[in-house]
Image (tube, rainbow, N blue to C red; front, side):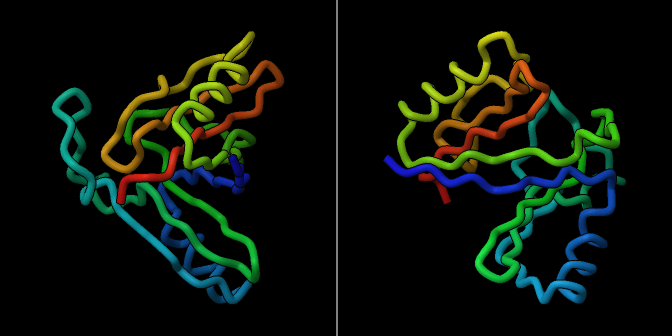
Amino acid sequence: MSLRLTTYLVMNGNAKEAIDFYQKALDAKLLFSQSFGEMPENPEFPLPESAKSLISHAMIKIGDSDLMLSDTFPGQPHQSGNQVTICISTADPSQARQLYDALSQDGQVQMPLQDTFFSPSYGIVTDRFGITFHIYTEGKQ
């Protein structure tokens, strides 16, 4: 079972600007980008028209490293200092569950581990030290 840790930046509505900046400043290559408007609609979380062009997920490559970015989901607070998180990627849903459960002990669940349109097992947890982890299981494209 292999794990990969990737830095994940959560921006305050300026993820596109950050991507452009890193492409110029660091010769970053855009690998993937999707806006909130391109995601499947969720009636439980209606998306304001003004948020549809914001980045829901992007990945750029800088040298040999990957960097993930997104804008804060509309309606969620953005707090300076909390915008750098870590994404743990695995191909094994049971390993994702084990990691998620371990990091949740004495921590705070931000998003329950669940099947999503982009991952068979994805969740967000802040550990007891205040570090936020995205647990991402590869498998859906």
